[in-house]
Each structure stands twice: as C-alpha cells, then as structure tokens.
Length: 312
Image (cartoon, rainbow, N blue to C red):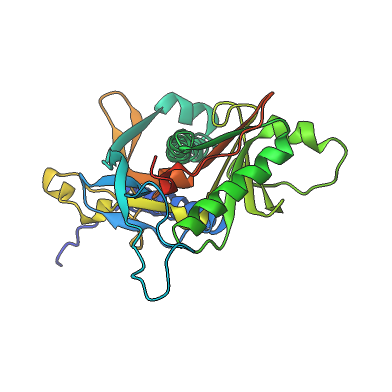
C-alpha cells in the first residue's frame, strides 16, 4: 500500500496577509472620510520625485487697464496677468516601522497587543500628513489682524472669496481652521454640535464655513484662524503599488484602489519581535499660497491685502 505523506500548513502567512489588507483598507477609508469632510476630489497620483508647486497670480501692469477712460471706438487696453511660482516642495516616499515584543503578546494577548499598537501606528501616520498640512497652511500669504475671534473668521473667509473672485475662479465652499480653546472660549453656554472623526474635531456649516476644524495648540496657535476654498486643496500621493520595490524583495500590501499606503507585517526570530513596515508618499497641498488667509486676533485691525492682484 502506498504511503501518503501529510503535512500541517500553518495559517501564519494568511493571518498576516489579512492583517495587512485590513490595515491599508481602514487607512484608505479614513482618508476617504476626511476628503469628504474637506470637500476634496479624488486623490491625485504623482510619480516619485515629483515637485509640488504653489502659485500666485500677479498683474504685470501697475493698475487695472481700461475702464471709463476708454473712448468710443478706441481700442480697449489689455491688463496682463502672470502666474508666478511661490513655493516648491518635493513629494517623496516616507518609510516607517513598528516593533512589538514577544513578551508584550504573552502578557496582554495578541488581540490587545497587536490590534491596539496597529491602531496607534495608523493614527500616528495619519497625524504626520495632517501636521505637515497645518504647518503648510500657516505659511499662507494672505494675512490680516482683527480684535475679535468671530470677526477674524469672517474676514478670513471674505478675503479668500475676494481673492478667488479676482482670479475669476469659482468657489463652492470655504473651510476653516481654528484653535480649539479659542472656539470654546467663544462658545460659552451656546449650544453647537461638534463632531469627531479619528481624533479631529470639527463643525459643519459654521458661520458660512462648510467645515471649521478645531485644532490643538501644536497645530494652530491660539488667536489664529485660517481659511481657504476647498478648490484650493488637493491630496497628492505616490502609489506604492506602482513601484519596483518587489525587485528588492520588498513586498508591501496595498488596497488595490488608490493605494495611499503600503504595509507589511512579519516576524523577526533574531530578537523575537513582530515587525510592521509602512511606506507612503502623501501630501495635502494648496495650489495658491495667496489663496490661504491667516488672520490673527490682536489689538489692531487690518484687512488682508490681495497683493497678487495689485502687482505688488
């Protein structure tokens, strides 16, 4: 009778693969939700090493040409505009790793130790992209001051609407960013619903803003508000699934759709740890830096000057 050799196939690989798929899928769903809140269209894929550029629209002439001075039958003079580069930054693949010891799993169990640390890892990766975006927003060149917080919000919104109208660009919605303590100081005993999503607090339809994000001191300083049209914000990314990383023996799991992140999990027998690796090239970016208005609350009042339309 012919003997039959049997073997036991461990489910380690399939378990890790399912974990990787779950991670990248949840990460992308979170960003889909944030894009919906912000009003951003589908992410824009870029090639590795691509530079992102912000612009300013400037008049070549000292003042707007034409008007009532143009006589009957006379040629109408053209006002010439030009678009100039105001900021450039590369979009690159960023690499991150997390390790978890065998002792941690033995003490807390796999469900707690692995799932909780994976969740925390995901939050940190999301926050890295958001923090870079907030830092970028604070460099907006449309600036002013107001004595009251509520007035600062109104002026910031008005300034970006004025700016985009001057460029003959449509604005559907404006989003705002404010310090959370400034908001609650203004709120007092008023009844306003604040929503939360993966750690972000925000209000819908507040003082004409489609969304007002309430951020801690680390992201937005006290007495500062920022506004920009949703049309001015894009999410760019490098697709880990388009790379030749597999030729290096680096096999990252992606979601198979927009592929915002690549993720891999495995064990290291040398030091008895479970290791996870993530790569991503994501950047939230504003096309026009002078379409981002930053208004501070202080002792004086100045209206943001749309300098790009005055040729200055």
